[in-house]
Amino acid sequence: MQEKVREFIEEYALSCNEKIRYIDLVSEIGELGKEILRQTDYGEKHYQVNERSVEEMGDCLFSILALCCEMNINANDALNYAMNKYKKRYISTGTISSNGKE
Image 1 (cartoon, one colour):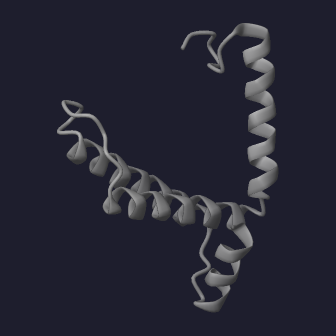
Image 2 (cartoon, rainbow, N blue to C red):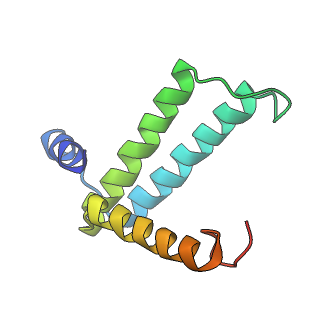
């Protein structure tokens, strides 16, 4: 997926610095959160997958992968690192939380 995003960025000359990519990621996460709140009536209803949520999640994925590209971080390596960290933490503490609470 990361290579696909890298190629898209290069093809359409969308390269920018990591600060801009980070701000874009935060913005996209906010849009996803807004859609979840709208869909659930601020938590009053059960969430149902819908086209808008899928679109917003796609924007988030694009943004995080674009940030990885700008920072020269291999997204797959970063995910594997996090998964191993969480697995070790869960085995030793019974939770993946860094403060020992869920």
